[in-house]
Amino acid sequence: MTYPFALLSLGMNMARLGLDAQVVVAERLHLLAKGDLTAGVEATRMVAEKMLAMGEANARLAQAAASGRLDRVGPEIVKLYGRKVRANRRRLGK
Image (cartoon, rainbow, N blue to C red):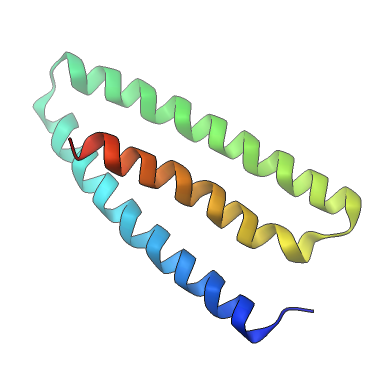
């Protein structure tokens, strides 16, 4: 059973993730538009990070499905992506 405050917390985490992701996309587009060596490094890093994050999310989904706890994996995945996006935001904001 999902409690209303848990849904509110999930919604707030998803909103923060969405806003942070917008900032990261803008920063990356600015960096990629330069077209220099750092742009190539960032493009490679971006693809590698996305593949690793997708693998982690799939592993958590599989683990939750095997244990019958699919109702609890959503917030966990949002937190996972949130940490990664915030790390990129800090790194790109320097």
